[in-house]
View 1: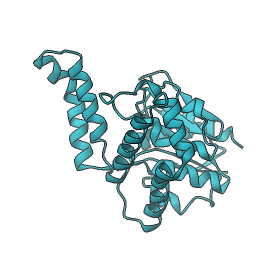
View 2: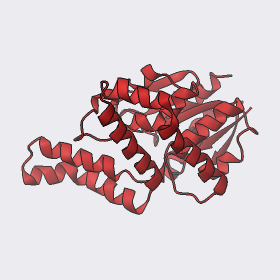
View 3: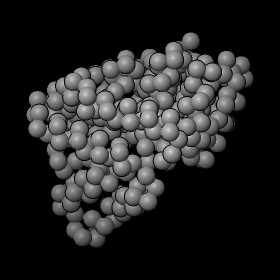
View 4: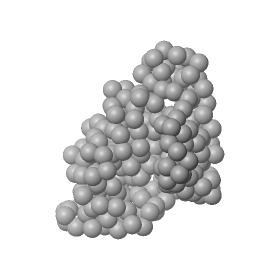
Length: 251
């Protein structure tokens, strides 16, 4: 049995390598890019993947990623989920939000989302000094997103793994508040990025609107699981142990 682990951040990958020591009966291969993993799907028994990766210029990967983006504009299922579950039947807001998500996915940055977070913090009525402190981490993330664009290639790998019939788990620290993010002052709900997975049965509508807050999220064949917020990020081997157990449970 062979499992791929795909993660671009070195500290998270090191945590994963420590975690696999508990599973001596399984062979693991570690990769740092989505394009590397693309060529391995179908040749292994399972995959555990991160969601966001730096931009790659691999022709096959970008073609699959384009297909993924097109689902947002061509799928009546996705649109109806966004209208019904995220925006309370407000077609106008749902349409605008989907357009923004597509733009974000094409550009590979999260500036729209982060700018909304800043606007929300402003609405709390902080004084100038308090506001600067409260938004410093957001500002740094915004700057990083502009200079180092990230793309949700992991979602593409999940769909390809599902099509290939191999076990698959997505592990991400994606921050989300499900359908509580329904106003223009709030950030783009992270779960919207994963809606194409609903069409293929990787997760359900009910799971998509569960409030995961800031928890580590696991999405796979047997459903979506959230850890308690902020207790164990991907730099902790415990998070990877849980992901490994989740992918093994699919056999």
